[in-house]
Length: 159
Image (cartoon, rainbow, N blue to C red; front, side):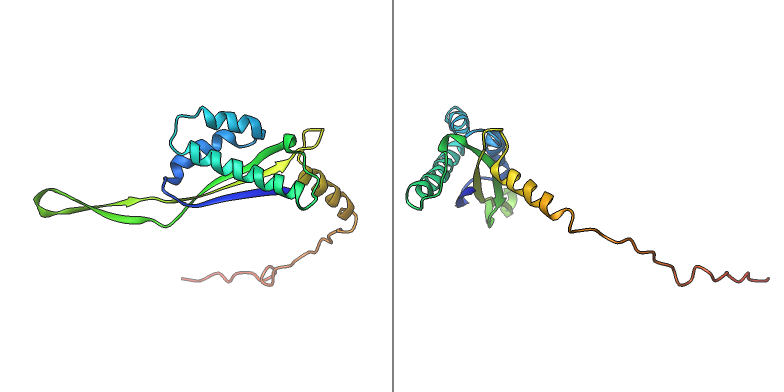
């Protein structure tokens, strides 16, 4: 099972947010929280709040909805920073001119998943079982395709 949290329209460049998100990809939740706590980037506090929101979403489903979730086995499956709308601004320049610049906005998304005892994600284990069950059913037939103009010879041009 996957648990998501999303923060939209964050006033940070997606490129700068990706630097922090790449630090926590694949880590366990506790390691990711500690990493974010000691990261010296302004966006690290926002990503920390987003990670806590995803953990709270998992906790809510385990307590209120009756879904069996072990919070100690959660890890960061994916962390993405996408582009949001851009704000175009103008800065005064010499000789009465104006320079345009862009203020970037990011949409941040974190997905948590649960690892089983072997260290694999549960989604991977379920996917492998489904592939094994479907493998004998999908036998593809090979077909031979002939070209229409393969047997024709080209005429030689005379001078």
